[in-house]
Length: 573
Image (cartoon, rainbow, N blue to C red; front, side):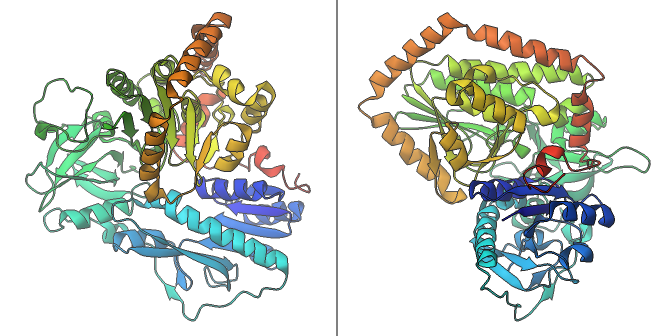
Protein backbone atom coordinates (compact mmCIF):
# COMPACT_ATOMS: atom_id res chain seq x y z
CA UNK A 1 0.00 0.00 0.00
CA UNK A 2 1.02 3.60 -0.52
CA UNK A 3 1.22 4.92 3.05
CA UNK A 4 1.65 8.57 3.96
CA UNK A 5 2.79 9.57 7.44
CA UNK A 6 1.54 12.89 8.82
CA UNK A 7 3.56 14.21 11.73
CA UNK A 8 4.33 17.40 13.58
CA UNK A 9 8.00 16.38 13.48
CA UNK A 10 10.02 13.44 12.22
CA UNK A 11 10.50 12.27 15.79
CA UNK A 12 11.65 8.90 17.12
CA UNK A 13 8.26 7.16 16.85
CA UNK A 14 7.59 8.56 13.37
CA UNK A 15 11.04 7.37 12.30
CA UNK A 16 10.40 3.90 13.66
CA UNK A 17 6.98 3.59 12.00
CA UNK A 18 8.53 4.83 8.75
CA UNK A 19 11.39 2.32 8.88
CA UNK A 20 9.23 -0.64 9.98
CA UNK A 21 6.68 -0.07 7.21
CA UNK A 22 9.46 0.23 4.62
CA UNK A 23 10.91 -3.07 5.86
CA UNK A 24 7.52 -4.65 5.09
CA UNK A 25 7.67 -3.37 1.52
CA UNK A 26 5.21 -0.48 1.71
CA UNK A 27 6.12 2.70 -0.19
CA UNK A 28 6.13 5.32 2.57
CA UNK A 29 6.20 9.09 2.34
CA UNK A 30 6.13 11.78 5.02
CA UNK A 31 4.46 15.17 5.21
CA UNK A 32 5.04 17.47 8.18
CA UNK A 33 2.06 19.40 9.56
CA UNK A 34 3.59 22.86 9.58
CA UNK A 35 0.53 24.96 10.39
CA UNK A 36 -1.32 25.58 7.12
CA UNK A 37 -4.28 23.21 6.59
CA UNK A 38 -4.64 24.10 2.91
CA UNK A 39 -1.00 23.34 2.16
CA UNK A 40 -1.18 20.06 4.11
CA UNK A 41 -4.36 19.01 2.31
CA UNK A 42 -2.79 19.76 -1.06
CA UNK A 43 0.31 17.78 -0.12
CA UNK A 44 -1.75 14.75 0.88
CA UNK A 45 -3.65 14.89 -2.41
CA UNK A 46 -0.40 14.90 -4.35
CA UNK A 47 0.66 11.67 -2.64
CA UNK A 48 -2.67 9.92 -3.39
CA UNK A 49 -2.14 7.54 -0.43
CA UNK A 50 -4.06 4.34 0.21
CA UNK A 51 -3.71 5.02 3.94
CA UNK A 52 -2.66 7.96 6.10
CA UNK A 53 -1.07 7.34 9.51
CA UNK A 54 -0.27 10.05 12.06
CA UNK A 55 2.32 8.63 14.53
CA UNK A 56 2.87 11.97 16.31
CA UNK A 57 0.56 14.86 15.57
CA UNK A 58 -0.04 17.75 17.96
CA UNK A 59 -2.72 19.41 15.81
CA UNK A 60 -6.00 18.20 14.37
CA UNK A 61 -6.06 16.51 10.96
CA UNK A 62 -7.90 18.79 8.49
CA UNK A 63 -11.41 17.58 7.69
CA UNK A 64 -10.54 17.71 4.00
CA UNK A 65 -7.97 14.98 4.70
CA UNK A 66 -9.76 12.59 7.06
CA UNK A 67 -13.00 12.80 5.09
CA UNK A 68 -11.26 11.88 1.82
CA UNK A 69 -8.65 9.35 2.97
CA UNK A 70 -8.63 6.72 5.71
CA UNK A 71 -6.55 8.37 8.42
CA UNK A 72 -5.28 6.55 11.54
CA UNK A 73 -4.05 8.44 14.62
CA UNK A 74 -1.58 6.96 17.11
CA UNK A 75 -2.70 8.16 20.54
CA UNK A 76 -0.42 7.55 23.58
CA UNK A 77 -3.23 6.32 25.83
CA UNK A 78 -5.57 3.32 26.14
CA UNK A 79 -8.90 3.10 24.24
CA UNK A 80 -11.27 5.81 25.44
CA UNK A 81 -8.51 8.06 26.76
CA UNK A 82 -8.44 11.51 25.18
CA UNK A 83 -6.32 14.60 25.61
CA UNK A 84 -2.92 16.13 24.82
CA UNK A 85 -1.01 15.06 27.97
CA UNK A 86 -1.93 11.40 28.29
CA UNK A 87 1.54 9.99 28.83
CA UNK A 88 2.59 12.90 31.07
CA UNK A 89 -0.38 12.24 33.34
CA UNK A 90 0.29 8.50 33.50
CA UNK A 91 3.89 9.06 34.59
CA UNK A 92 3.08 11.83 37.06
CA UNK A 93 0.30 9.73 38.63
CA UNK A 94 2.74 6.86 39.14
CA UNK A 95 0.67 4.33 37.13
CA UNK A 96 2.29 0.96 36.49
CA UNK A 97 0.54 0.21 33.17
CA UNK A 98 -0.66 2.31 30.27
CA UNK A 99 -1.64 1.84 26.66
CA UNK A 100 -1.50 3.13 23.11
CA UNK A 101 -4.39 3.27 20.65
CA UNK A 102 -4.63 3.49 16.87
CA UNK A 103 -7.92 5.19 16.08
CA UNK A 104 -9.58 6.70 13.05
CA UNK A 105 -9.55 10.47 12.70
CA UNK A 106 -12.94 12.19 13.09
CA UNK A 107 -14.06 15.73 13.85
CA UNK A 108 -13.45 15.39 17.62
CA UNK A 109 -9.84 14.84 18.64
CA UNK A 110 -9.06 11.27 19.85
CA UNK A 111 -12.75 10.33 19.61
CA UNK A 112 -12.76 8.04 16.56
CA UNK A 113 -13.31 4.27 16.34
CA UNK A 114 -10.40 2.05 17.35
CA UNK A 115 -8.50 -0.10 14.84
CA UNK A 116 -6.00 -1.56 17.31
CA UNK A 117 -4.50 -1.02 20.75
CA UNK A 118 -1.75 -2.41 22.96
CA UNK A 119 -0.75 -1.94 26.57
CA UNK A 120 2.65 -1.77 28.24
CA UNK A 121 4.28 -1.67 31.65
CA UNK A 122 5.57 1.60 33.11
CA UNK A 123 8.78 0.93 35.08
CA UNK A 124 8.81 2.93 38.32
CA UNK A 125 12.09 4.77 37.69
CA UNK A 126 11.81 5.75 34.02
CA UNK A 127 11.15 9.20 32.59
CA UNK A 128 8.48 10.02 30.02
CA UNK A 129 10.82 10.42 27.03
CA UNK A 130 12.66 7.16 27.78
CA UNK A 131 9.30 5.42 28.19
CA UNK A 132 8.08 6.95 24.92
CA UNK A 133 11.10 5.66 22.98
CA UNK A 134 10.98 2.29 24.75
CA UNK A 135 7.89 0.56 26.06
CA UNK A 136 5.40 2.88 24.35
CA UNK A 137 7.24 2.67 21.02
CA UNK A 138 7.17 -1.14 21.14
CA UNK A 139 3.44 -1.13 21.93
CA UNK A 140 2.72 1.48 19.27
CA UNK A 141 4.44 -0.61 16.61
CA UNK A 142 2.42 -3.67 17.56
CA UNK A 143 -0.78 -1.64 17.33
CA UNK A 144 0.15 0.15 14.08
CA UNK A 145 1.14 -3.05 12.28
CA UNK A 146 -2.05 -4.77 13.46
CA UNK A 147 -4.14 -1.80 12.32
CA UNK A 148 -2.44 -1.80 8.90
CA UNK A 149 -3.05 -5.54 8.58
CA UNK A 150 -6.71 -5.14 9.53
CA UNK A 151 -7.18 -2.23 7.15
CA UNK A 152 -5.53 -4.13 4.29
CA UNK A 153 -7.77 -7.14 4.86
CA UNK A 154 -10.88 -5.08 4.08
CA UNK A 155 -12.88 -7.21 6.49
CA UNK A 156 -12.34 -5.38 9.78
CA UNK A 157 -14.64 -2.73 11.19
CA UNK A 158 -13.16 -0.44 13.85
CA UNK A 159 -15.09 -0.27 17.13
CA UNK A 160 -15.98 2.65 19.36
CA UNK A 161 -14.75 2.45 22.99
CA UNK A 162 -17.45 1.98 25.60
CA UNK A 163 -16.54 5.30 27.24
CA UNK A 164 -14.41 8.37 26.59
CA UNK A 165 -12.46 10.36 29.19
CA UNK A 166 -11.06 13.76 28.25
CA UNK A 167 -8.05 15.00 30.22
CA UNK A 168 -6.90 18.59 29.56
CA UNK A 169 -3.34 19.71 28.98
CA UNK A 170 -1.18 19.17 32.06
CA UNK A 171 -0.43 22.74 33.14
CA UNK A 172 2.64 24.06 34.91
CA UNK A 173 0.47 24.66 37.96
CA UNK A 174 -0.21 20.92 38.19
CA UNK A 175 3.45 20.15 37.54
CA UNK A 176 4.76 22.63 40.11
CA UNK A 177 7.06 21.24 42.80
CA UNK A 178 6.45 22.35 46.38
CA UNK A 179 9.94 21.78 47.74
CA UNK A 180 8.76 22.25 51.34
CA UNK A 181 5.93 19.71 51.08
CA UNK A 182 6.55 17.22 48.28
CA UNK A 183 8.46 14.06 49.21
CA UNK A 184 11.22 12.78 46.93
CA UNK A 185 8.93 10.28 45.20
CA UNK A 186 6.48 13.03 44.21
CA UNK A 187 9.27 15.34 43.05
CA UNK A 188 10.74 12.61 40.87
CA UNK A 189 7.38 11.77 39.30
CA UNK A 190 6.83 15.42 38.39
CA UNK A 191 10.32 15.77 36.95
CA UNK A 192 10.09 12.53 34.99
CA UNK A 193 6.67 13.40 33.57
CA UNK A 194 8.17 16.52 31.98
CA UNK A 195 11.76 15.42 31.45
CA UNK A 196 12.26 16.23 27.78
CA UNK A 197 9.35 18.62 27.27
CA UNK A 198 8.02 20.87 28.63
CA UNK A 199 10.11 20.73 31.81
CA UNK A 200 8.92 21.82 35.26
CA UNK A 201 8.89 25.58 35.81
CA UNK A 202 10.66 26.61 39.01
CA UNK A 203 12.40 29.63 40.55
CA UNK A 204 15.80 29.60 42.22
CA UNK A 205 19.10 31.49 42.08
CA UNK A 206 17.07 34.57 41.18
CA UNK A 207 15.90 33.14 37.85
CA UNK A 208 12.98 31.19 36.42
CA UNK A 209 13.99 27.83 34.98
CA UNK A 210 12.48 24.75 33.45
CA UNK A 211 13.86 21.65 35.18
CA UNK A 212 14.49 18.65 32.93
CA UNK A 213 14.97 15.12 34.25
CA UNK A 214 15.40 13.74 37.74
CA UNK A 215 17.43 11.06 39.52
CA UNK A 216 17.32 10.11 43.22
CA UNK A 217 20.16 10.90 45.62
CA UNK A 218 20.77 8.36 48.37
CA UNK A 219 23.07 10.21 50.77
CA UNK A 220 23.07 14.01 50.61
CA UNK A 221 20.51 15.91 52.70
CA UNK A 222 19.71 19.56 53.34
CA UNK A 223 17.09 22.29 53.55
CA UNK A 224 14.28 21.59 51.04
CA UNK A 225 14.93 23.34 47.73
CA UNK A 226 18.58 24.06 48.57
CA UNK A 227 21.28 23.19 46.02
CA UNK A 228 23.51 20.71 47.82
CA UNK A 229 26.08 19.78 45.19
CA UNK A 230 27.02 19.84 41.54
CA UNK A 231 28.42 16.85 39.72
CA UNK A 232 28.99 16.01 36.06
CA UNK A 233 26.89 18.98 34.95
CA UNK A 234 23.91 18.14 37.19
CA UNK A 235 22.71 19.90 40.33
CA UNK A 236 21.48 18.19 43.50
CA UNK A 237 18.53 19.78 45.33
CA UNK A 238 17.20 18.80 48.72
CA UNK A 239 13.64 17.56 49.20
CA UNK A 240 11.65 17.11 52.41
CA UNK A 241 12.98 13.58 52.87
CA UNK A 242 16.03 13.31 50.62
CA UNK A 243 17.39 14.90 47.47
CA UNK A 244 17.22 14.68 43.67
CA UNK A 245 19.67 15.29 40.85
CA UNK A 246 18.53 17.49 37.95
CA UNK A 247 20.75 17.07 34.89
CA UNK A 248 19.43 19.86 32.66
CA UNK A 249 17.96 23.36 32.92
CA UNK A 250 16.34 25.70 30.43
CA UNK A 251 15.89 29.41 31.24
CA UNK A 252 12.36 30.70 30.89
CA UNK A 253 12.11 32.75 27.74
CA UNK A 254 11.77 36.46 28.31
CA UNK A 255 9.45 38.57 26.12
CA UNK A 256 11.17 39.62 22.91
CA UNK A 257 14.13 37.28 23.41
CA UNK A 258 14.98 34.27 21.21
CA UNK A 259 13.85 30.76 22.23
CA UNK A 260 15.89 29.17 24.99
CA UNK A 261 17.13 25.58 25.00
CA UNK A 262 18.21 22.88 27.41
CA UNK A 263 21.77 22.71 28.71
CA UNK A 264 23.59 20.75 31.40
CA UNK A 265 22.42 22.40 34.60
CA UNK A 266 25.76 23.86 35.65
CA UNK A 267 26.41 25.20 32.15
CA UNK A 268 22.95 26.76 32.03
CA UNK A 269 23.25 28.82 35.19
CA UNK A 270 26.84 29.80 34.41
CA UNK A 271 25.53 31.13 31.09
CA UNK A 272 23.01 33.26 33.01
CA UNK A 273 25.64 34.53 35.43
CA UNK A 274 23.86 32.92 38.37
CA UNK A 275 25.84 32.25 41.52
CA UNK A 276 26.29 28.58 42.31
CA UNK A 277 26.28 26.96 45.71
CA UNK A 278 29.38 25.89 47.54
CA UNK A 279 29.52 22.25 46.46
CA UNK A 280 31.08 19.75 48.89
CA UNK A 281 34.87 19.81 48.52
CA UNK A 282 36.53 16.88 46.82
CA UNK A 283 39.77 16.05 45.10
CA UNK A 284 40.21 15.04 41.50
CA UNK A 285 37.81 12.19 40.77
CA UNK A 286 39.13 8.87 39.54
CA UNK A 287 37.22 6.76 37.01
CA UNK A 288 34.63 4.76 38.94
CA UNK A 289 35.25 1.08 39.65
CA UNK A 290 31.65 0.51 40.78
CA UNK A 291 28.38 2.40 40.77
CA UNK A 292 29.06 3.74 44.25
CA UNK A 293 30.25 7.34 44.45
CA UNK A 294 32.12 8.93 47.31
CA UNK A 295 29.73 10.40 49.96
CA UNK A 296 30.94 13.94 49.31
CA UNK A 297 29.84 13.65 45.66
CA UNK A 298 26.53 11.91 46.26
CA UNK A 299 25.39 8.85 44.35
CA UNK A 300 24.68 10.29 40.90
CA UNK A 301 26.94 9.57 37.95
CA UNK A 302 26.30 9.65 34.21
CA UNK A 303 29.19 7.21 33.61
CA UNK A 304 29.83 4.03 35.60
CA UNK A 305 32.16 1.06 35.32
CA UNK A 306 31.32 -2.41 36.63
CA UNK A 307 32.79 -5.88 36.28
CA UNK A 308 31.09 -9.26 36.12
CA UNK A 309 33.62 -12.07 35.84
CA UNK A 310 35.97 -11.16 33.01
CA UNK A 311 33.58 -8.66 31.42
CA UNK A 312 33.80 -4.92 32.04
CA UNK A 313 30.71 -2.77 31.52
CA UNK A 314 31.16 0.93 30.73
CA UNK A 315 27.67 2.35 31.09
CA UNK A 316 26.64 5.92 30.36
CA UNK A 317 23.41 7.88 30.22
CA UNK A 318 23.49 11.30 28.62
CA UNK A 319 20.23 13.27 28.25
CA UNK A 320 19.03 13.19 24.67
CA UNK A 321 21.97 10.99 23.71
CA UNK A 322 24.22 14.01 23.10
CA UNK A 323 27.88 13.86 24.19
CA UNK A 324 29.64 17.10 25.07
CA UNK A 325 33.39 17.61 25.01
CA UNK A 326 33.55 17.05 28.76
CA UNK A 327 31.42 13.90 28.59
CA UNK A 328 33.54 12.45 25.79
CA UNK A 329 36.71 13.11 27.75
CA UNK A 330 35.32 11.54 30.91
CA UNK A 331 34.09 8.55 28.94
CA UNK A 332 37.57 8.16 27.43
CA UNK A 333 39.10 8.36 30.91
CA UNK A 334 36.79 5.61 32.13
CA UNK A 335 37.54 3.51 29.04
CA UNK A 336 41.28 3.83 29.66
CA UNK A 337 40.72 2.82 33.27
CA UNK A 338 38.86 -0.27 32.03
CA UNK A 339 41.85 -1.18 29.87
CA UNK A 340 43.94 -1.55 33.04
CA UNK A 341 41.52 -4.14 34.43
CA UNK A 342 41.86 -7.95 33.97
CA UNK A 343 38.88 -8.35 31.63
CA UNK A 344 38.59 -10.07 28.24
CA UNK A 345 35.48 -8.27 26.97
CA UNK A 346 34.47 -4.62 27.31
CA UNK A 347 30.82 -3.65 26.79
CA UNK A 348 30.13 0.00 25.98
CA UNK A 349 26.60 1.39 26.30
CA UNK A 350 23.79 2.25 28.67
CA UNK A 351 21.15 0.03 30.21
CA UNK A 352 18.30 1.56 28.21
CA UNK A 353 17.25 4.44 25.92
CA UNK A 354 19.76 6.26 23.68
CA UNK A 355 23.17 4.85 22.87
CA UNK A 356 24.53 8.11 21.45
CA UNK A 357 23.60 10.83 18.99
CA UNK A 358 27.12 12.21 18.68
CA UNK A 359 28.28 15.72 19.52
CA UNK A 360 26.29 17.99 21.87
CA UNK A 361 24.78 20.65 19.61
CA UNK A 362 23.13 22.52 22.51
CA UNK A 363 26.42 22.99 24.37
CA UNK A 364 28.09 24.01 21.11
CA UNK A 365 25.35 26.56 20.38
CA UNK A 366 25.76 28.08 23.86
CA UNK A 367 29.56 28.36 23.60
CA UNK A 368 31.28 31.72 23.24
CA UNK A 369 32.90 30.34 20.06
CA UNK A 370 30.65 27.63 18.57
CA UNK A 371 33.15 26.84 15.80
CA UNK A 372 35.93 26.19 18.30
CA UNK A 373 33.63 24.16 20.55
CA UNK A 374 32.43 22.13 17.56
CA UNK A 375 36.01 21.18 16.76
CA UNK A 376 36.84 20.43 20.41
CA UNK A 377 33.79 18.18 20.67
CA UNK A 378 34.70 16.31 17.47
CA UNK A 379 38.31 15.90 18.59
CA UNK A 380 37.15 14.52 21.95
CA UNK A 381 34.84 11.91 20.45
CA UNK A 382 37.53 11.03 17.87
CA UNK A 383 39.97 10.39 20.71
CA UNK A 384 37.51 7.90 22.21
CA UNK A 385 36.89 6.15 18.89
CA UNK A 386 40.63 5.93 18.20
CA UNK A 387 41.18 4.28 21.59
CA UNK A 388 38.50 1.70 20.83
CA UNK A 389 39.82 0.98 17.34
CA UNK A 390 43.34 0.41 18.64
CA UNK A 391 42.29 -1.90 21.48
CA UNK A 392 43.62 -5.27 20.29
CA UNK A 393 44.06 -7.26 23.51
CA UNK A 394 40.35 -7.71 24.25
CA UNK A 395 37.02 -7.64 22.45
CA UNK A 396 34.87 -4.52 22.54
CA UNK A 397 31.08 -4.71 22.21
CA UNK A 398 28.84 -1.72 21.54
CA UNK A 399 25.48 -2.47 23.19
CA UNK A 400 22.68 -0.28 21.82
CA UNK A 401 19.59 -0.35 24.05
CA UNK A 402 18.00 2.40 21.97
CA UNK A 403 18.52 4.85 19.15
CA UNK A 404 21.86 5.92 17.72
CA UNK A 405 22.54 8.61 15.14
CA UNK A 406 25.31 10.49 13.36
CA UNK A 407 28.57 10.31 15.29
CA UNK A 408 26.95 8.10 17.91
CA UNK A 409 26.10 5.48 15.30
CA UNK A 410 29.66 5.66 13.98
CA UNK A 411 31.02 5.38 17.53
CA UNK A 412 29.29 2.00 17.78
CA UNK A 413 30.99 0.82 14.58
CA UNK A 414 34.40 1.17 16.22
CA UNK A 415 33.59 -1.89 18.35
CA UNK A 416 34.25 -5.47 17.29
CA UNK A 417 30.57 -6.33 17.64
CA UNK A 418 27.40 -4.23 17.68
CA UNK A 419 24.47 -5.65 19.67
CA UNK A 420 21.24 -3.74 19.21
CA UNK A 421 17.82 -3.98 20.81
CA UNK A 422 15.18 -4.76 18.22
CA UNK A 423 13.25 -1.54 18.90
CA UNK A 424 16.21 0.79 18.28
CA UNK A 425 16.36 3.09 15.26
CA UNK A 426 19.69 3.90 13.60
CA UNK A 427 20.53 7.00 11.56
CA UNK A 428 24.10 6.45 10.27
CA UNK A 429 24.50 9.77 8.49
CA UNK A 430 25.42 13.44 9.04
CA UNK A 431 24.04 15.19 5.95
CA UNK A 432 20.94 16.68 7.55
CA UNK A 433 23.12 18.79 9.85
CA UNK A 434 25.28 19.96 6.96
CA UNK A 435 28.32 17.96 8.08
CA UNK A 436 30.67 15.54 6.37
CA UNK A 437 31.20 13.57 9.56
CA UNK A 438 34.13 12.25 11.56
CA UNK A 439 34.56 9.43 14.15
CA UNK A 440 36.63 7.51 11.55
CA UNK A 441 33.43 6.67 9.66
CA UNK A 442 35.26 6.64 6.32
CA UNK A 443 37.17 3.64 7.68
CA UNK A 444 34.57 1.79 9.76
CA UNK A 445 31.40 2.15 7.66
CA UNK A 446 32.79 0.87 4.31
CA UNK A 447 34.64 -1.85 6.24
CA UNK A 448 31.27 -3.19 7.40
CA UNK A 449 28.91 -2.57 4.49
CA UNK A 450 31.07 -1.77 1.46
CA UNK A 451 31.67 1.54 -0.28
CA UNK A 452 28.45 1.55 -2.32
CA UNK A 453 26.12 0.89 0.62
CA UNK A 454 28.06 3.35 2.78
CA UNK A 455 27.50 6.06 0.17
CA UNK A 456 23.80 5.24 -0.07
CA UNK A 457 23.27 5.30 3.69
CA UNK A 458 24.96 8.64 4.15
CA UNK A 459 23.23 10.25 1.15
CA UNK A 460 19.71 8.85 1.65
CA UNK A 461 19.73 9.99 5.29
CA UNK A 462 16.83 7.70 6.24
CA UNK A 463 16.32 5.76 9.49
CA UNK A 464 16.96 2.03 9.74
CA UNK A 465 15.42 -0.59 12.01
CA UNK A 466 17.79 -2.89 13.87
CA UNK A 467 16.91 -5.91 11.66
CA UNK A 468 17.52 -3.85 8.51
CA UNK A 469 20.86 -2.71 9.92
CA UNK A 470 21.73 -6.33 10.70
CA UNK A 471 20.92 -7.36 7.12
CA UNK A 472 23.34 -4.68 5.85
CA UNK A 473 26.11 -5.65 8.30
CA UNK A 474 25.90 -2.56 10.51
CA UNK A 475 24.65 -4.67 13.43
CA UNK A 476 25.94 -8.11 14.42
CA UNK A 477 23.16 -9.24 16.74
CA UNK A 478 19.60 -8.06 17.26
CA UNK A 479 18.38 -8.54 20.82
CA UNK A 480 14.63 -9.15 20.90
CA UNK A 481 13.60 -8.11 24.40
CA UNK A 482 11.75 -5.43 26.35
CA UNK A 483 13.72 -2.27 27.20
CA UNK A 484 13.89 -3.24 30.89
CA UNK A 485 15.36 -6.65 30.00
CA UNK A 486 18.18 -5.41 27.78
CA UNK A 487 20.87 -4.96 30.43
CA UNK A 488 20.40 -8.46 31.87
CA UNK A 489 20.35 -10.03 28.41
CA UNK A 490 23.53 -8.21 27.38
CA UNK A 491 25.22 -9.38 30.59
CA UNK A 492 24.41 -13.01 29.74
CA UNK A 493 25.56 -12.61 26.14
CA UNK A 494 28.83 -10.93 27.15
CA UNK A 495 29.56 -13.65 29.70
CA UNK A 496 29.12 -16.32 27.01
CA UNK A 497 31.42 -14.38 24.69
CA UNK A 498 34.09 -14.04 27.37
CA UNK A 499 33.93 -17.80 28.05
CA UNK A 500 34.04 -18.87 24.40
CA UNK A 501 36.99 -21.19 23.65
CA UNK A 502 37.77 -19.36 20.41
CA UNK A 503 38.39 -16.00 22.11
CA UNK A 504 42.24 -16.15 22.15
CA UNK A 505 42.34 -16.99 18.43
CA UNK A 506 39.89 -14.22 17.68
CA UNK A 507 41.99 -11.68 19.57
CA UNK A 508 45.04 -12.76 17.60
CA UNK A 509 43.20 -12.33 14.32
CA UNK A 510 41.94 -8.92 15.45
CA UNK A 511 45.45 -7.71 16.21
CA UNK A 512 46.78 -8.97 12.86
CA UNK A 513 43.92 -7.32 10.96
CA UNK A 514 44.51 -3.97 12.66
CA UNK A 515 48.19 -4.14 11.76
CA UNK A 516 47.38 -4.95 8.11
CA UNK A 517 44.87 -2.10 7.90
CA UNK A 518 47.32 0.32 9.50
CA UNK A 519 49.97 -0.62 6.93
CA UNK A 520 47.56 0.05 4.05
CA UNK A 521 46.38 3.37 5.44
CA UNK A 522 46.96 4.61 9.00
CA UNK A 523 44.03 5.68 11.14
CA UNK A 524 45.63 9.11 11.46
CA UNK A 525 45.12 9.64 7.72
CA UNK A 526 41.40 8.92 7.95
CA UNK A 527 41.14 11.28 10.90
CA UNK A 528 43.09 14.05 9.23
CA UNK A 529 40.97 13.95 6.07
CA UNK A 530 37.69 13.93 7.99
CA UNK A 531 38.74 16.73 10.32
CA UNK A 532 39.95 18.88 7.44
CA UNK A 533 36.45 18.75 5.93
CA UNK A 534 34.79 19.34 9.30
CA UNK A 535 37.09 22.23 10.19
CA UNK A 536 36.32 23.93 6.89
CA UNK A 537 32.60 23.81 7.75
CA UNK A 538 33.08 24.96 11.33
CA UNK A 539 35.23 27.92 10.29
CA UNK A 540 32.84 29.06 7.55
CA UNK A 541 30.20 31.36 9.11
CA UNK A 542 28.02 30.93 6.02
CA UNK A 543 28.07 27.12 6.10
CA UNK A 544 24.55 25.63 6.48
CA UNK A 545 25.69 23.76 9.61
CA UNK A 546 25.48 26.87 11.78
CA UNK A 547 21.92 27.76 10.81
CA UNK A 548 20.82 24.10 10.95
CA UNK A 549 22.34 23.72 14.42
CA UNK A 550 20.63 26.85 15.70
CA UNK A 551 17.28 25.72 14.29
CA UNK A 552 17.71 22.25 15.78
CA UNK A 553 18.49 23.32 19.33
CA UNK A 554 15.73 25.96 19.34
CA UNK A 555 13.24 23.51 17.78
CA UNK A 556 12.36 25.80 14.89
CA UNK A 557 10.02 24.20 12.39
CA UNK A 558 11.25 23.85 8.82
CA UNK A 559 9.49 25.83 6.11
CA UNK A 560 8.57 22.65 4.27
CA UNK A 561 8.85 18.89 4.50
CA UNK A 562 12.39 17.80 3.57
CA UNK A 563 12.34 16.36 0.07
CA UNK A 564 14.11 13.10 1.01
CA UNK A 565 11.15 12.20 3.26
CA UNK A 566 8.57 12.71 0.53
CA UNK A 567 10.06 10.67 -2.27
CA UNK A 568 9.05 7.12 -1.32
CA UNK A 569 5.37 7.58 -2.11
CA UNK A 570 5.42 7.10 -5.92
CA UNK A 571 2.92 9.91 -6.51
CA UNK A 572 4.65 12.39 -4.20
CA UNK A 573 6.25 15.35 -5.96
